[in-house]
Amino acid sequence: MFFTATTQFGLEEVLAAELRQLGATIEHLGSRAVEFSGDKRLLYQTILWSRTAMRLLRPFADFDASNEQALYDAVSALDWRKYIGPGQTFAITAVVSRSWSEHSLYLAQLTKDAIVDQFRARTGERPSIDTRHPDIRIHLRMLENEVILSLDAAGDSLHRRGYRQATNEAPLNEVLAAGLVLLSDWDQKSPLLDPMCGSATILTEAGLLAQRIAPGLLHQGRFGFESWADFDADLWAQVRAEAQAQRLSEPQAQLFGSDIDPRVIEQAQLNVAAAGLTDCISLTVADVRDARPPEGFSSGIVLTNPPYGERLGDEAEMDALYKTIGDALKTNFQGYEAYIFTGNLAAAKRIGLKATRRVPLFNGAIDCRLLRFELYGGSRRVGSATAPHPPSPPLQKRGGN
Ligand SMILES: C[S@@+](CC[C@H](N)C(=O)[O-])C[C@H]1O[C@@H](n2cnc3c(N)ncnc32)[C@H](O)[C@@H]1O
Image (cartoon, rainbow, N blue to C red; front, side, top):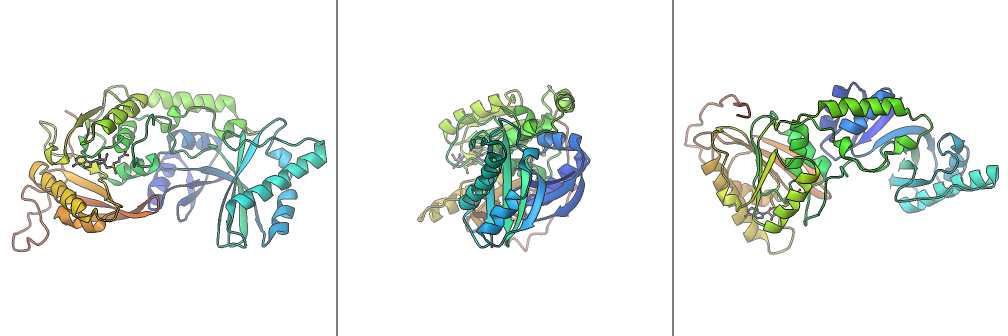
């Protein structure tokens, strides 16, 4: 069977590595998508285990449609009884670019009409549409008039893990947060700190990873594939039981979060509790300037997503904040590696450290970078060319205690 997993820009390689680890054969690495093949067990495992897949699609038709009539005819030519069973509800999600119509809602409507007309002509009855919780979600993608129709295996975007209880102003997408953790060199044992943690998405994703919790186990409600004609309930129960058994109950790593805003820390606590990670993640109210590593750990990871300051007039405030971040890292976190995920590259210069890695990513429509800084004993500062650079020490990875 062939599948397409979609993801966020910049996480394609991370997703492909996850899929390979699950046993998939990678067929093609695209932009925001990875095509792969495998069996039904792999599909079920991917739904449960992938941290960086957004949608998981099973393509079943591919055709050219250069106008409205061509799309209607091609959709009508398919036998929809194979995909939508008696009494099942369905919905269409359309994504379109560089085609005769750029209106995804219109294309979804046209496709829906062709399907409904076919059922009505055959049986006299029409299946019901349920755009929020359909039994079967069909995904239509049109690129340069080429249409691919797929069944959406999850039925929803997998970034909706089910642990988010409350939303602060700018929470990171869970898939993106998991991607940041996987892009970092974190060994899943050393301390990981987020001193501007907001709703604690980064820490929650890190906790799920360290505790070997399959994110799909947190999902509430049914997945799309559970309504497919070929759904294998026994296999699904088996794959779920295997995933449950992998979960580690003893905390594997120390995870620390802080934020200057007490309200977001309250929200973060709710999210962390909903993910079952209260024993693994400590949260406090603090200014980033006061962030310190936990006692007894001379190495670890700082991974944080500071504000970007999107409003006009925020420049001076952002410059000062990023300078404070840089000062705190240099003074308090020697021996650590820091990862700053930001869409404000001008302010990021105020950190005053040379990034040893810059990974291009997007946060929604905002062009971002994940910047890595290595915090040596005598920190390497921008412009300190006269100071001799100490030799790069091998990254010290330490156990959790
Ligand atoms: C972009 S949000 C982080 C969102 C977070 N990654 C999430 O998923 O919810 C930035 C956070 O930095 C916090 N913040 C701003 N200035 C701070 C400071 N001086 N010290 C600590 N936290 C600060 C804000 O309260 C906000 O929650």
